Amino acid sequence: MTTAATQAQRRDQHDVVLVPFGRRHLEGALALSQEMSWPYRLEDWAVALELGQGFVLESAGVVVGTALWWAYGETQASAGMIIVAKAAQGRGLGARLMDALLAAAHPRTITLNSTADGLVLYERRGFVRIGDIRQHQGVPTQRHEAPPPGLVRAMASSDRATVRRLDQDATGWARGRMLERLVQAGDGYVLVRGGEPRGYAISRPFGRGHVIGPVVAESPTDARALIEAALARLGRVFVRVDTSAISQLGDWLEDIGLQQVGDATTMVLGTQVPSTGPARMFALANQSFN
Image (cartoon, rainbow, N blue to C red; front, side, top):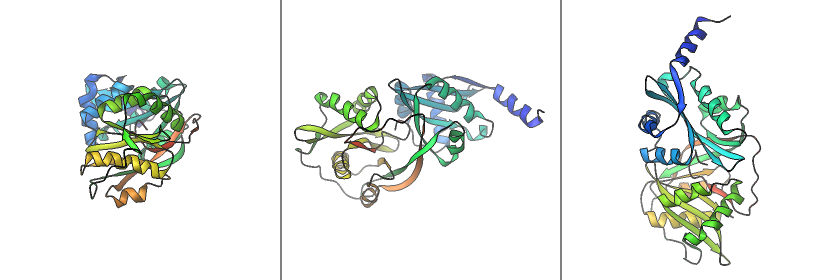
């Protein structure tokens, strides 16, 4: 039997139109993220859309929901920037967005980082929890010295192929186009051992200041050296680093003034590709790109 509440919800959903995410939606998406106190700039939304694709929910021409995903080859993808306006929540719109995203990305394995509020939505669609992310940010308490140039140096164009391989070995994802775009927007660093790059980091403007990530390295010590190189270049500005709970970087980040201010749960739908190492990911590009 259809209840009056169910009928009202169906009418509400009928008034909301699902359309592909286009550039005309960027201002509306920014307003939506600002309502949620998420720190995205218009430029961050634009880069995310340039590299990915997704859907928008519109009500009378106003953006009331967003969802984006990024293909990493034919078998893997990440998803994020999934938002429903506060006034529109509780009407099944998050499920509508997510179902459209899953259909578009199928049959890829999808990885995402969920807030506490999103866990039930994703678990109902078969996502399983595989880890936790810690968001660290702040202004470093002191200036940092760059590591010796024989250990960490600026990324050169000739390093790009090796960096793509390092990243794919660490993550299982073919995301060379994304890495090229992130380096274009900021600064890249490689850690060299035996004359060969063995790790890398990218620092770029994002949100309230700069984000350092991805960081791919063979050990916490190497990851710290790459982050130190980026901090030495940035000076005392607002910095964000998103790292896993098992990275062994948390205490050090706290010590240098980057306090933990939030967390997220990493979830996956499908078969996760194992790292073939020896390098692994110590910091994310951001919680949407992973």
